[in-house]
Image 1 (cartoon, rainbow, N blue to C red):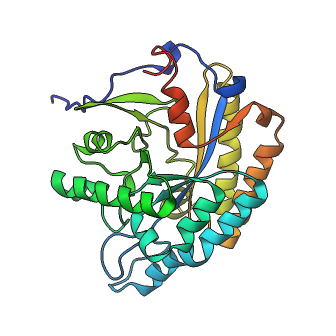
Image 2: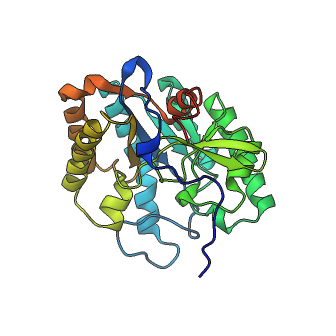
Amino acid sequence: MKLKKHNRYAYSPITERQDFTWPDGKRLAFYCALNVEHFSFGEGLGHTPTAPGPQPDVRNFGWRDYGLRVGIWRIFDMMDELKLPMCHLINASVCEEMPQIPARIKKRGDEVIGHGYTNSERQSDMDEATEAAMIAQATKTLGDSCGRRPYGWMGPWISETAFTPDLLQENGYTFIMDWPADDQPFWMKTRKGRIMSVPYPIEINDTPTMLSRAQPATDFHRMIIDQFEAMLRLSKNQSLVFGISMHTFCTGQPFRLLQVRQAIETLMKHPGFSNVWVTTPGGIAEYAAKLPAACVP
């Protein structure tokens, strides 16, 4: 069998890269990502905590809608109390129907990451023209609603076509979060230049853990702490990126929110937290882009 190649980046073992530090000599970059997702009623893709029903599947639609009506506001309040920034991977359709959400994001000064128009569809199902139009529409809507256009992107369901990095770079995006291939940023080739890949956590991520694998919220709590402690130790050798990914309808449930809050509070009280750069994916991409070439493959 002849293996197909993506030709977006070359193999680079992390042990062979030139060492660097984050701002102020920090070794571990930390960010919290909130997926703010909106779905079509009675059709399309959708997360589910239980068996899907025939359309219109009101039980599962209502559960997802809880995240935007209730869960997100509790997450906002929690992060306000913890005095931590967030990045929001947000479907542009949220801005059209729920203006209170982008208004709160603007008030907090949080970062916005493009996340398609709706999570009822995948980019991988689109032809190039359809995908290009969707990216342009989502970018404009997010910019108009949130006060600043996004420069980072993660596709709905972390999906891409063969053209996605090219289209994003041509639409002014500087980084992408679809490729969980590293613990450091790296450059990807596009047909008209390059775009940076910033690590996004698909393991320290509430929906794969608690929905797909049906692990309890207490497991997610332990995973966050274990990942932090392990990466803090590993970052003595290489500066790394540690992210936590949440979804409004998953972490937004009170019993899960309690476990996530307790885990983050534990991190913030850890003696090693003083060596952590609290930031956003955009901050990571901007800083990494100025590092020597030998540091970022």
